[in-house]
Image (cartoon, rainbow over all chains, first blue to last red; front, side):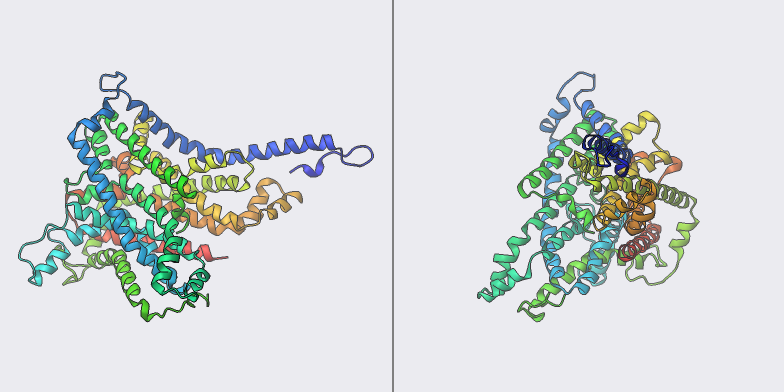
Length: 307
Length: 266
């Protein structure tokens, strides 16, 4: 900063006009410097994410013969297989999100009520899976659920069943595997928001004669809803575009949106179709996040800064 | 801390909650524990607990040229990604933290775009772009793609470090005549170095565990470990993968503990 060296007039007093000019030049230099620090990262993101997606969007507007047409999008309404894919995707997303709420809310509630040290220890059970490879966890569920997997072996050894149950390669397997992967995304923001609920509010409620159940239902639950909503949105959005677990655990029977995109581009090299699917997926994702932002005024992506 | 449990509800009344929470925690951790135990099994059948113990799946992992090559590729890419993402991410976080630039919201949105945009779309887009500029199946291509994925995590981690640091200290250094860079490296960086190291570790693990984008843009000599695992899982359940998975789990634990340690280090 060169402010200190700004000129003085003959009498030794600072010259306002010259100083102002120097300050402005200084501020400009400062901004340019900061922009220079930002630009490599921004350029990289722009080149690797924004440009290709824009390009794909452009491609999706043309049919195989290179004519401008909406055929890539019209297909979604006309072909039964696409409709089935969308139905499956939303079914999986709703079921997994529901299961995450069902399992995640009690866990986050328990964590928020435990003394700090115990909560920290229990939080490891959430954070470690969060940072364990999705592939590793999917493999684990395959080992547990498949035909000759652990559950079937146990049940047969115990004499409960004679024939192995079809536990893997179906809808339920996909839901179980994905719930396991998505749960931390719900628990972490929910836990953070529950931690910030003022215990005095609860104590006041109980002082005024509310039962523990009433205190929970009328005070704690409403105050925890924003955190729950942010977890729900992030889980739902991630489910819509999820690839690894359904691809490995669906046994070819559960075809989700992302798998359709992979098939269209890798298998059939039909970029227009794959791109159109991607555009709709992105639009759905942004619409959900935007709606959430508009309704609650907070960003749903906070989960990554609350590890 | 002492006031936390002053609600007039006893632990006994909460037993059902602890039981439920414990079950969910078991659900979260059991798969990893089972895989670690299974990786030491002596049998190629899936038995739990294993009847006999051995290191044969680790031998099969380390003895296989294909798995070893894939691991080396992944390590190389992850190290280079960690370096690139940390440099770019720290610089960007510094600039965002100064808050003097306009459009901070748009800049944030762009930098964190890869957290929101479906990974499958990023994978297809990157593959499409790389096909035109010849970066598919190259280390450079992988490092660039992974850096974009890791960048937001570094930015968020370093930014949270900068938020708890008083920028006036750097201003003082500069008004005393230190240049911009020496002020940063001598005054600011020593105080936020723990966040920077945490960010680097998160970047490393993000790259090492990345599956979807690698599936599209890696192949041949630059097949990453996760791509090879994914393809192996599509065919059949090879217990070698249990040994590899155990190594990945241990890596996650080590890196997370390091990040925790550094995060608390000050």
